[in-house]
Image 1 (cartoon, rainbow, N blue to C red):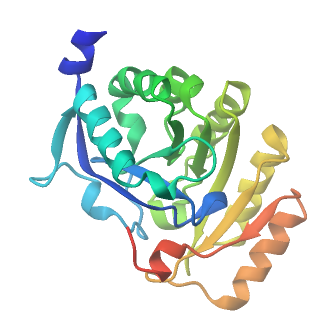
Image 2 (image 1 turned 180 degrees about the vertical axis):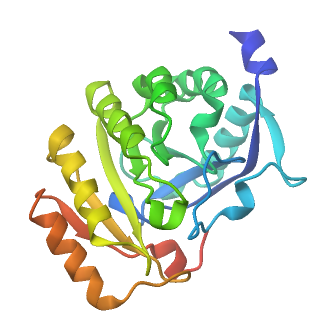
Length: 244
């Protein structure tokens, strides 16, 4: 294990402390690990700078990343008041580097950190390898209206894997733009209904790219609410507050 900790590396765009800006944990302190590289391209992406490996990318070995995370935690410990300190794995797409995560996550769990996985939900076969280390899975549904193609089968398998394994909590997010259509919302809600009816679905209107018509937001909410019980309409607050 020591050899793996020092030898396996992954491209990381940035490691930083901030507050969660979207989903059920909006406003909660977290240490963010932003992986570089993504397997899809969405028109509304707000971290497009991290979807490719650029000259700003740094390669971390697992032990180096654990050390950086621990230092950030020591420097911001006063903000972590309740529960275990949370590590948000984001991107890009973290699951592209599952070999690295298999080495990293046991070390973080051993040091008392909670693991919060932010993912586009398109790599279910990779999720199976690390789901046992994840405390929370924040999964996006990606729509053809903004991401060039649909991923319904991948999302379905991903959600099945997330719910059937050891993660404590799973919730699903959808970014709503001017191009989103109601059939995409209904399809999302029906997938959730068939696999995990109680899992929350969070509809997130884009506020800076392809902004949706406000009259459509309630229509989408009602359409989803008729299918599943836990539907929320929430802004992406990190954009409102202009924070990372």
